Image (cartoon, rainbow, N blue to C red; front, side, top):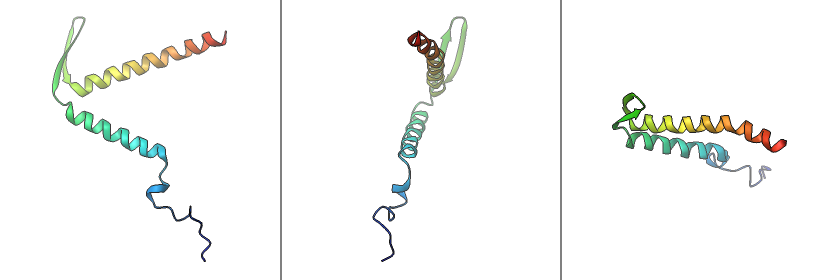
Length: 82
């Protein structure tokens, strides 16, 4: 006997943490999203018009939403502790 237990003989894939698998799935989803949304679109905001790929526009909207969320979270936490 070599002294190896059942957990020491796991395959290489089984040793990869779940967070890495989740990250890979998200990365594949992002790549598919970019490939499928490459057409240009015109965006109007107030007096400015810009032509940009749809994926850039949607990514910008998501980033703006995340920033607003991050800016609002501290004020919500402060209100709860009062």
